[in-house]
Image 1 (spheres, rainbow, N blue to C red):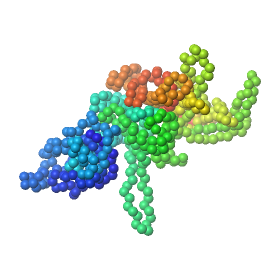
Image 2: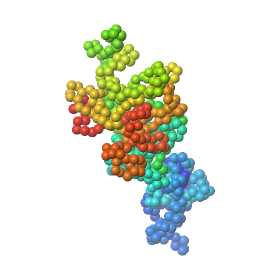
Image 3: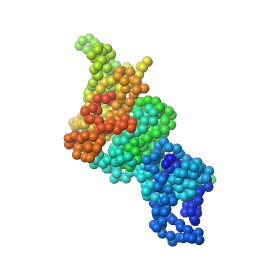
Image 4: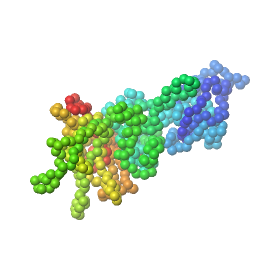
Amino acid sequence: MTPTRPADSDLFTPEERPSKRPRPSVEPVEKIHVGQAGPSGKVPVEVEDEDGEVEDDADPQDLASERRSDLYLDTVNRQTLDFDFEKYFQGRGKSSYAYAHSIHDDHHVFLNLEIQKVYILPDGYEVQDPSLDDISAVLAPAFSPAQVAELSSPSHIHKLSYDLSSKPYLPGFVGLNNIKRNDYLNVVIHTLAHIAPLRDYFLLFKPIKPAATIAPIKGSAPAPLTPRSSELLNRFAALVKKLWNPRLFKSQVSPHDFLQEVVRASGGKFKITEQGDPVDFLGWLLNHLHVDLGGSKKRSSVIHATLQGSLKVESQQVVARPDWEGNQRTEFRIDEESKVQRSPFLFLSVDLPPPPLFQDAVEKNIIPQVSLASVLAKYDGKTVQESGAQVRRFKCEKLPPFIILHFKRFTKNMFVEEKNPTIVNFPLKGIDFSPYLEWNGTSPSPIPYDLVSNVVHESTAGTTRDKANTVWKAQLRAGRVSGSPVASTLGAGAGAEDEKWFQLQDLVVEEVQKEMIFLGETVLQVWQRRETPDTVMQNGP
């Protein structure tokens, strides 16, 4: 079956349908998907008697088997059905390519990709049959609120799905095609698709299409603009639904529709043919989705409700004083005037200590390491950072339900882009963010966060960034699976407190041991606040 891109069109009505065997349409009226596919329902049946007249009292159920053979439904080959990289035809009339294709190539079942209606060509009539529901579920998966709620329950990890080749896969943990060099985009898609509030919102998202407009009567007030969702928003939601679809024909998904819109909407800033920075793409995508969802600086959206926090920045002019050894040292003077700014954030940037400039033969084989707590000290309100002619201190005033950390691993100078190979050691659960929150005199209480996803960068060894040999991987938490059938099917299980983690690199999905996660060059992390009675969101209890 050969897919197509649909368009709005006029369809047959019961009055327009011929009284005898349906005949081909005369003009191209819509974009048709070449192949064998369609939705569910019943079709009215008309039968001719021996004199050629139509019998209105014919029993449709007696002719079900004959109808199915007439509709060529037995020619549907789901193994070769592909909605991603096949060709598209427009129209279904006698002058259309779809009509000619149905005659010359003996392909008769065509699917409209927008409205999921099925037509038989060259006859040109619509067919409805429940045996084609699975194809509609692959093309446009839909989720109920109960199904979405099930994804957050511990039982989700126990429910495997199977593709047409009987290969098991876990919905949400499927590979994305790397069309050329778009792996830096794929890891961001995986990361956002596993932030529960965003995932749930987009799984239930329904595109808003503009309604048909009528020209206003002369002298009357103009009709109000009909709201519609942006193409970027529609395609991102469709991609998230495919990632979590339990009825895939293949345990992989192509993001090419969404990425084509990204290239267009960004004016070519993000390309699928060249390596880029996932952090830049993440910031751009979050801001655009927020605006497309009706958000602004004053109006919130699911993006800001989930990821936006608030940061207090105190700045002072640089004052250098000698320490006890006589060396000049920059410090923050409490008794001097300081400027206070409050700024919202969608992710926190974390600075890594620079690697040693001069190394001997032994030190070259040693990779520098640092703990997550030491680099997060930037936001404790005490650590001073020098920036230009000012010194600054940072403190969080509001912590969001999900915190995105960006480890600043790449820097540019006049000659080359450098990479910091420092390894960050971090726990997978229970990192306490209370030291980085402004409590305003109240007694602090723990605010534990657990790791949800970890994006790592791999390239050739050294301190120079090598984009030609760069690989991006997303490591995602799946949940506890001990004692479930998943443990024996997808990998070895462990104790009762064991959690399953998967590493996704393009189409490769494999289990990764928890102890190996912190060994990569982490660039992005997502932490989820653990809901406890003592959890505090803003300014303490």
